[in-house]
Image: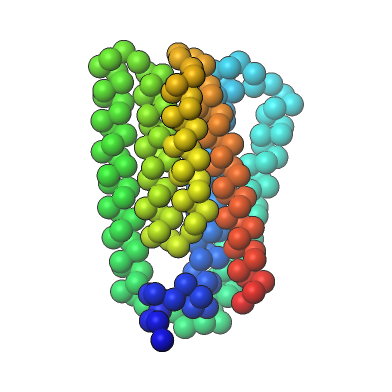
Length: 198
């Protein structure tokens, strides 16, 4: 029989996945909101109607996330805890990916300023963000994050080839923001399915 670290169907890990989805979804949604606001601001299309829809969607994702966290914590009490060694291994792996991402982002911003192309800095930064989701998906056993990372990276590559200046910034920010919001909702839907199956 596979041990707990290797068995993705382990109820304890499944309960942790629900909690993780609830904790990660608002962070992803927050970054998505920031990018959407940035893109709409650069495009000068942020008005009262857009702001209302924007605020409603952000609030909906936040409330849904809080509910998912509570549901996951309730489920977690019903199963044996995940071993501390597993938690430490996940934490170390996540920290390593986060550190590499920070270094890569710093390099992107420095280089884009050196060549006087801040628009490319925005595109490359979002590409780094997309790529960082690929190992994160494996660490947290969340395939939706792998799909998200792939889509963000491909979108940024496409925008790089099609746009320049403000148009590049707007397209990258809006496209990535929308993808982050969709991924947040997808993670919460997946958590709901897991919770119903346990």
